[in-house]
Length: 255
Ligand SMILES: [Cu+2]
Image: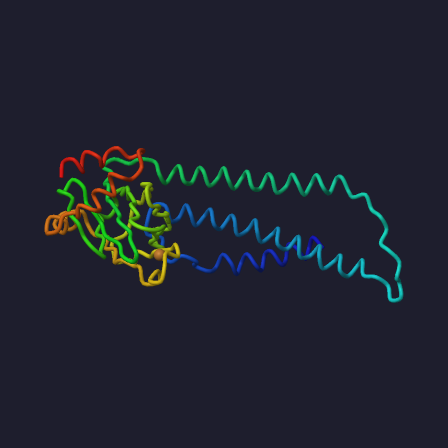
């Protein structure tokens, strides 16, 4: 049985780990999150096969004999086994919890020269505000500089949406009334898709935006060329958002 678990786990892990689940790793967070996911895959695969092999063995070994109509024997249980199947999952869950905590902490470590970008989500569109540049505003397209830590402040206008650029790995819900934050450091230039990944209504599937990661000088030029300013209702929504984000208040008053 142990040999069966080892062989089946090895084959399944080889297949699962060879698949590139989330595309290129284009942020500092991506390799860390992929490592975490790979560890979770290996652990779940081994547990899956322990359960399956034990189940197959039990189905075969304890099958009732033909003609046997008697009740099963009353069995008290197996204390050692029960302790084992309580302790082992507890240790695994605590390990994964602790490891995830460390990964998230690493990813969110504040870097020098953070850049804050406001993200406005509504049924079914994304738009963006660039502070420090007189609240320059872009709709449907997000530009960010490469190799700079970006703090995305999310402001949902109606229902819950979720911010996700697969190649960055980071995914964050946008919740009405609350400012949620996602911290991302893109490491490669290129064009990506921002995808809404929380079912938000009829047009959810088409709620996407273009993301351009470019060298900082090019990004500055692009922001400087933006004509629109963040519309007042959006600035108000920033103000109405959570009390944990006092910074935008001044920006509303400044407007
Ligand atoms: Cu959506």
